[in-house]
Length: 251
Image 1 (cartoon, rainbow, N blue to C red):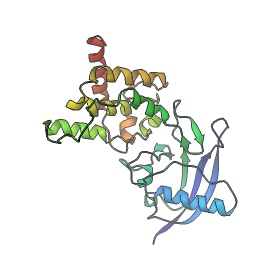
Image 2 (image 1 turned 60 degrees about the horizontal axis):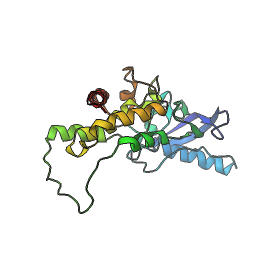
Image 3 (image 1 turned 180 degrees about the vertical axis):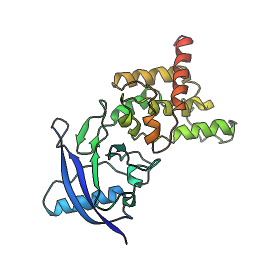
């Protein structure tokens, strides 16, 4: 089984009010079949055996679904492989003897809690302000009762692929949450089920986004480049249209 030796430069920060620093660690005989998070597990096991504090990092499903994991690896959110979350990134994409710099997602709206762990609750509040639909309670509705053109459903599904990891925000020079917000708006605005709140949805979510101190979009496209689910910036254009429609209809 191929193995590599690497040097890690990892951001260590005790808590949200402390100053952080990069600390260096050498790891030998790391299997190239390991995922990036499994490599961090190996590091933490070594640190624990030395009675040192392990590196704190977020993770959950480790299947690229939940959006919990995320860090900036060598200056790129989620690492060098496009369309890949940090938990899906494998060590075979790094070279023997390479120095790998790992730091948390950085944004004014993402406070670092500890090491690589950040507070993403600002994204939850954007969702709470408009990322929902009104439905009657009761039995499960028939799936085919509302016909939807296949092209429309595909566009909605593409937007719904967003896992809310925050990589787009960490990569944007303005710290903008427009790609995330536009994906959540698009997936509902395109479907009949999302029409009852359509006019106020964009305004409420954009208002919350501004209150959370996210920046605005200036079409840098860094967000689209690092998105692990390949969300298109065309959704941002749809967000702008939805926002203007809300204003022009008097909401």
